[in-house]
Length: 155
Image (cartoon, rainbow, N blue to C red; front, side, top):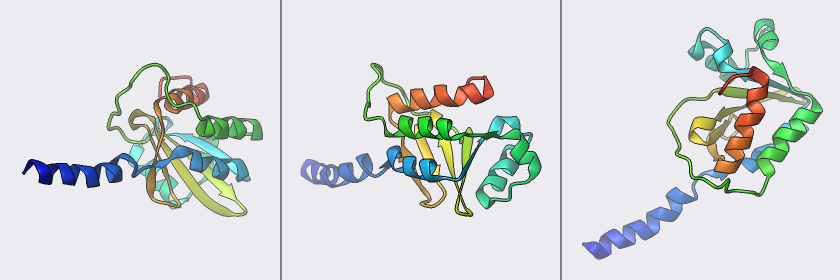
């Protein structure tokens, strides 16, 4: 029985441990976007409604006014955060199970996509892949600090 359990663990561990993609794969999408709009979900009355608007890409003027249009410098900074090779920040942190706090809406040559950042659980969801991307502890801390400056509160 112990042997069978060991074999199962040996085959399942690589699948679960390395199943998530690294968030640095999203950096080119941010860099090449013609327009990038950061949406802070807590700025809206209805959390489920704003998530529905973001996922369907039905952006109206009210959504646009409440968002933060990222200039080229901010997009370059965000891409550099995601591609930074540093992984350990000197402490371990737990991954909570909360929903997304922000979304980055991207338009490139008229095509719409979005990235939802879930910093509490160290993940990002990219609309074109429907899979989660892992954000390591160091990148997660730097990303959280970067996003805080747009809302001025703890995200």
